[in-house]
Length: 77
Image (cartoon, helix red, strand yellow):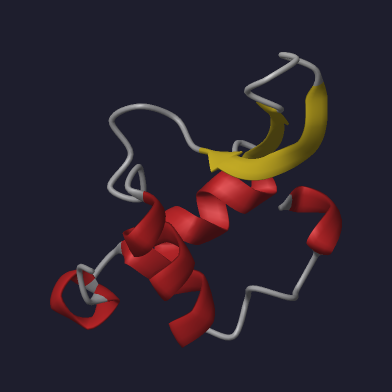
């Protein structure tokens, strides 16, 4: 995992921008029963804009955790 502290300058501001613009979105990927191919559950994934310094999930979530923002607005995650 990449430590957010290694990249902290600018990450908090980038997170502010992404959240304000609602550019972090949730998508739900189905998981299927291998025998039947039927969906049995969904995996929640967070997507960010390509090219953002917070594009990698470990950096995004570590930045949100280290700045106390993971639970700030669950509707955005």
